[in-house]
Image (cartoon, rainbow, N blue to C red; front, side, top):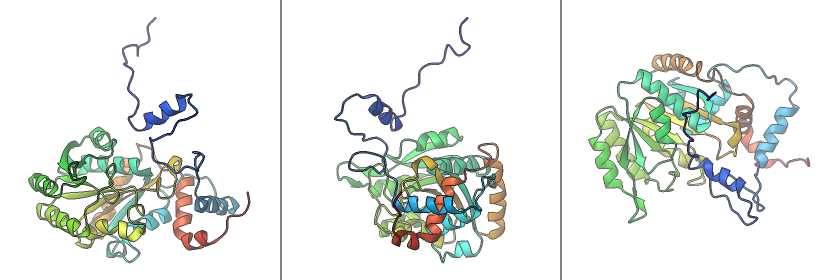
Length: 317
């Protein structure tokens, strides 16, 4: 008897993750994995950062820790520290309770939760993403029910930013459209606007009521400074307007398999942020109910004790 699924066709491997599948199958001793970007030792083995090892030791030694379910929005202190990391310790938006933050499943999960929220609650269902962009962006937003369009970004002839094309395309976007912005270290080109160009982008977008959705997957990697790399996001937040920010700790903490991320929605008023937060719970609950505790606890420990952890020696294991 034939399977009821006999008509299902074989799907192609993911263009990014599929490289690792092919790498693992290749019997050659002289091979190099150029797929997913992840820290490796000189021998090509996975590398866990010392600061992550130290944070895990602190967690393991804390006998008061339990494995209870987290709230739907995740670890509250992790959310607070994540918002401060991207918006700044002295952010007026945080001080005025205008930020709704949810712990999500790394950058992909943060983008998807934000996309699902927008598809349900926002009047515009079109999102503009740069050309080129991370390969998963189109799928994440399309699967959530948004319509994806491109805006010009990279100029292969100059190997730099097509700034004029970017401004023209965003200028032609319908009022209220969503715009995906790479906060820093644009993936895959590595080309970022200057501070002056970011300011022009901000003014152009705000004049048309375009909604910024930042993907911050590499904070600290572009300039070497967490604060400098967060400057584009903070420029948009400083004008009092609203924006979405998806954060990932996969790269800057090397927590790839822990799936640690956060979605922050900056609102114009505290009461709006409170209502947004309540609706975020309704998006998350039927999706994955609540996020895992371990990876977020590692990130929280690092963010809370980063100066101490960076200056202490890792004991012999």
